[in-house]
Image 1 (cartoon, rainbow, N blue to C red):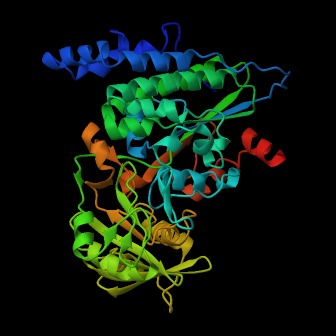
Image 2: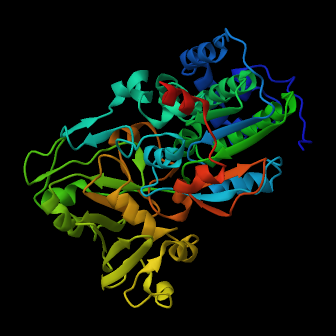
Image 3: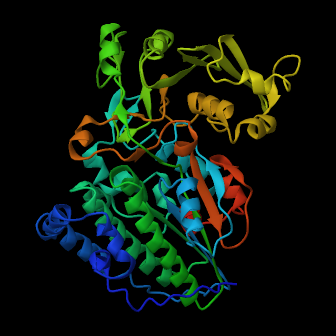
Length: 487
């Protein structure tokens, strides 16, 4: 079944990325003249401490198995690679990579297309709880305060316990992942390579029928390094998969999927704070009064979530909707989701497995022309029909995703969700100091929403929702999910 074999004898460890031979030259191939001198000097000076820490974490002895484990008849290795879009994977396949796999399917992410919300949705059938927030840094509506700051990320208990991360047999530590931001993009690339080495070690030494691994390095590479760095990593991942398949003494299938995409292009920060201030709102870390608005600033992403008093939602949406870079605003009142932008206003309602999109003024989502022939007497359309109509539109699966995002999504739901146009972002101003944004995700557009899933075991449906991915994989039973149930 698996015929592609490459020798791994040339692999010498985590510093292989800087070897002057083979495809590793690509890391510096776009640097010439004085730029290459700067590149080499960075390695000699700034990278030494990072190399040392990553080398130690990579070569750390694996946990000794102290009991006899029944060898399975076959194995399934499942790898989640954060933030890799289907367009990037298709480019790689067009160049001859990932030949062991059947064609990739488009995995349509949640809205907003952010990691915590998406992976919690994907892994809910496997035992994951709903995410507390859209990302690790979130607003706790009950406690009325922000949670999940930088210090919490470096406390493995808070970072992992009670989250989707508990289900992975391999997940890099928060400290190790954070090193990628020390001197991007080179530190990001180095961290990603050590991550891949560790993943390979764990996968090869696992005796479980299903081995489930995660790497977030791919998302960091996309944000900070761009597509060149990301594709170099994916090239190595392809070789890693071939190694695992070739070296296994029993049949092994491999599945790779992502939680969302990333859109590679130039970006501009959208100005949200000043218009809110002019309208009389006050940005704070908690809701103190009717003027208070909390705007978590995590990462650099293509959407924003705002928390305020319920009565402010309509006014807040009208302040933000006309701004440059804003695609639309969504908020929920009494089970009805309102969608507002500079072109008009509409509502989305749900009845059983049907949704109704009703334009109040204009057509903010440009849906009337494609839905008019299917509208029943009361305007409700079956979910499966909405999916067929919009899964490959500029805003994939738009009606269901907006409704679910505004009414469900995470435990601490925002009052207002701002979807930004392609080419605009918001988030931590501190990160702007350290990097130039190369790509991002978070909005409802194709490039940011389309993740992927592909397997060596067989071909999957061409379009798969995040909530349906695990079922499409056969409702795989994870070892860590079983152990959590037993405890």
